[in-house]
Amino acid sequence: EEYIPRLRLLGEVLVNALERGRATDRAREQAALVAAAVDAAELGFSEWMPGRERPHLDSRSRDLLGIGEEELAKAEELWLARMHAESRPAAVESRRQLLAGNLERATIEYRYHHPRRGPIWLRHSSRRVEGEGEQGARIVEAIEDVTVRRQALEDVQRLRERVERENV
Image 1 (cartoon, helix red, strand yellow):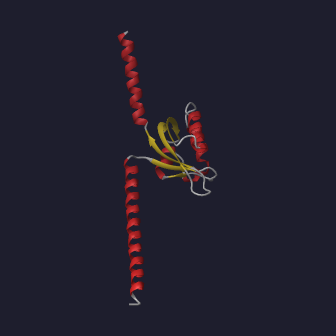
Image 2: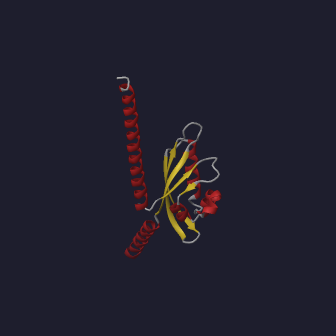
Image 3: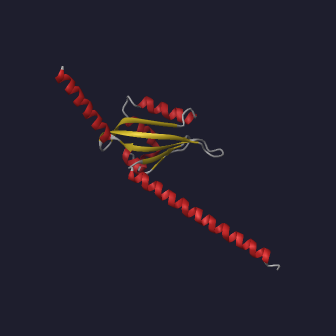
């Protein structure tokens, strides 16, 4: 009888360990699903934190932005320099508003001069994520190449203008 409380305790410990293992497995499965969805959508992922020496850019983001691993320390400088001048003020203001806590989410589309591909269109969907403890807020972004869609829109606009000129 003296072993019964100890056996119960041991049983509870084993059950808790199994439940933690199952929760870990579910978390891994969810992470794999998210990674597969991001890959299927051909999205890049980035994380920017004030005070951090360099941002985290996954390989697709580095490819979309034309920023090599060795250039990460100056990623923000390169990103802004390659962005079309008309888009730069809105992008800078959006980032400032997110970091200040005035916006929770922001989306911008802009022309970008890729160092190897030339002019492209990118779409950044950003979200402010509050840090825990003393860790400050950070910006998490999904980056998408929308060049094909933007070119199709420009083609439609040119056709519309041509039709209007010819019908006048």
